[in-house]
Amino acid sequence: MNMAPIALHGLPKRLVDDHLIEAQDLEVATSSAKTAKISLVQYLCEKKLVSDRAIGNSAAKEFGIPIYALEHHSPDSVPKDLIDNKLLKKHKVMPLVQRGNRLFVAIADPTDHRALNEIQFQTGVAVEPVLALYSSITEALDQWLEDNADKDMGEVLGTLDDVHLDDLDMEAIDEDDTGSSDTGSEDEAPIVRFINKMLIDAIKLGASDIHFEPYEKSYRVRFRVDGILREMAKPPPNLAQRLAARLKVMSRMDISERRIPQDGRVKLKLSKNKSIDFRVNTLPLQFGEKIVLRILDASSAKLGIDALGYEEDQKAMYMDALARPQGMILVTGPTGSGKTVSLYTGLNILNTAERNISTAEDPIEINMDGINQTQINMRVGLSFAEALRAFLRQDPDIVMVGEIRDLETAEIAIKAAQTGHLVLSTLHTNSAPETLTRLLNMGVPSFNVATSVNLIIAQRLGRKLCSLCREPFDDVPDNVLSEEGFDDIGIDKSQFTIFKAVGCAQCTNGYKGRVGVYETLKISPAISKIIMEGGSSLNILEAALGEGFRTLRASALRKAAQGQISIEEANRITKD
Image (cartoon, rainbow, N blue to C red; front, side, top):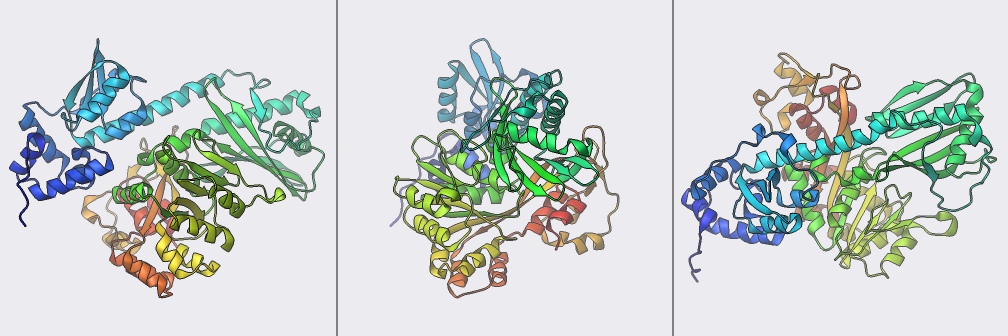
């Protein structure tokens, strides 16, 4: 039966008239965009069905207005804090300037009334759309949000330059109320100042961990910055016990107990609205106690998926898996590879008033409003499996399990994924295909694995090249690029430049910050069949590669080709 002709008008009609897309394909795209609750232009651009330049040209003709060049717009004129960042990222619009009671915003589709109305409702001012290319808007928006986040943090850290090191605002986070209240070492001003200085310096440098390490004839303090440990101070070794006592007092531990490991937490208040938690752990050594503080910054969970380094196809897979009502998403990688941030980013996307989200964590690294977080406590019998059983009796929509460590936890998590719940969790494996065989080796039936797991993300963190001092490698021979694997990354070798680390006053040995490197394995029918037939991880990898799967190695080399990381860094994090 022939379908009735599609009634087109406005920009969609112009796109068809300009032969950019067939009418039938446009109807499907329109329906899919509505389902995804995004604009048609955003859908067409993200799915690469029509180029944003072609859409922009058609929109300019349709509405008789020029395309605004966002790259020439001054960021100083952008109104700050007028529109909620979530709304900007949701609709992919960029505020430009406010003149009186009118707010001008860059938008790829000036007829996107839903976006314009929501912005007008939130701001209470009239909204004037300005036509711009979708890619220009997303780039400008990401840069603006990142710059503002850095500026906000910079303002907070700037106030720490003059802070009195004797009197930082800190409080212990007492989880079990078993710590000693002995505060005998708190009056030791030099020790207090030294430790406070170490905390402040670590935050300023963006460190993830602080290591206090005693040896027979020396003592050192090291920071882990961008994944690499750096020695920062060498206090006299005879201060080892006093330093340990101060750190244990801060985090409400028993200062008289030096024979067994202890755990604690402490909160450092940087300003009225900004604080950072430290997770503290002690370990008895031959010559004292090593104490490690992990810095937990809640803002890292709210970066947004665009800031994590996913490529467009990988991001689309993750977003599609998050949008499903049930099934399992597994994130895998070694300790310190960014698994927690990936999971929290997904939870932050899902965190709405309509959903009941529960997590079982060991430990709870970042507190998130709107999410029910449970701290695992093996001393009282509260394991991951017990927490999961309790969750399933509390009408959950989404469950996050910090780690699947045993068969019991795996079986309950998979049962939840099969009975209408979305489950997120982690495993410690080296690659996405190996994760499936790890579940099978635990004893999970192959049918359950094949029918419950939707997506597996394996990841690493690579140090980003400093954009201020990186230098291009001149005339890298093709055979060298081929030996490294650049033939298999999907980018023509003539289209990219390889950069090397140099080093300047603004970075550390040529690197500044880190970026995620990912492989995303979607469980297709073909891969499900291999799992149920008892295939190995090599069989799964071969089938996945045939479906366009990109390995961690290929993803790292693509980051090198894009100038984000060096070949040395790609080799450090992915080469066998």
